Length: 432
Ligand code: MEV
Image (cartoon, protein in one colour):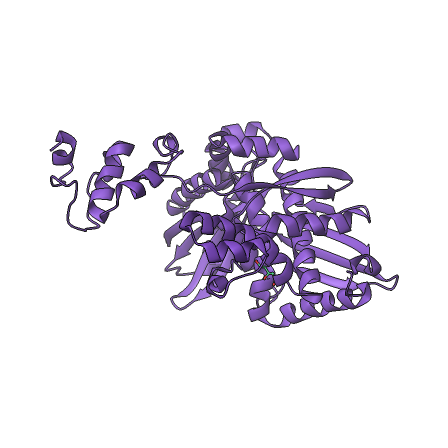
């Protein structure tokens, strides 16, 4: 028995009883970790090789604890996009076959009318500081507001680099939040994070300001963390195209445009539909977030919270037919994205993706992502309003079936895939 097996607690067959208790796993080398988890989970040599795969150098460098492999996702290029008069090639990372094709199709339609116009707010994030067991909310609020200058200086002292780049703490606002435990005060620390996503900067500053507040107020200082509902960092995009341009061989453009408008009205009124409508928008936005090394969970959280800002969960886009027979679409959502910061520096593909897009600032990236969300939505609604999404979707999905068939050696699946059809047993795999 090899020494390493003994030290990992594996038996002579390289196995060990199944348990989730693996103390010190994070201290092991990649190979030892693979050997241990493989032995505990009862993996075959083939399965261990799959994890080791071609990415054997990756996990060693991974920033996460207990890395055991990498899960590669395809990086595609969305074409045809024009934003603010500039052509943009869009790197998109997604496993869903129809996302890049749908986006490129939508962007081609919008391109004929000059493309998408987009804008965004300054890159301001909000750090939240919770005060609870507040005895006199009025008095505490006044005291905090009077100390605003000092507290902003405390925040800025935590981020000299950001301040040197023109960013830094801008304002402080105190909100009263009625909770089951009485009124809490929530201090919002607004920070311009320039081209960073800003989470680390904001959290560090929020903690420092929380400590400073603790010495000034009698109440208890609780949680200090950024909010992903980045309402000071909204991005917007709009486009306008003749309804006639939406037509397909089988469907007239006017009817499709009306279908798009009514689908949007439905999503606005019905959260069940809005969730799917917005998921389609995020198909594009998340794909760019992944390609550019941005935190797509933060973006998702902000987008869905923003979708409810009117009082109920609704569509993130609006589509209308204007009097001149133009279909006009718009989107607005928080986009807390960065073009610099340690996560992006450590992510070689993200740097290449930025180069492909020719973006430098976080604002440029946010504008492009808003445009991508709008176009992705147009493509989905156009297909839904015409033939439905399955025909086009399954043509692309057939490739995935063919790949699965090649891996599984399943002849019947391969023949279905060659004909662009979906065998009955693949229905559950539909990636919507
Ligand atoms: C599938 O990933 C996305 C769609 O469901 C979006 C929509 O329904 O609007 C097609």
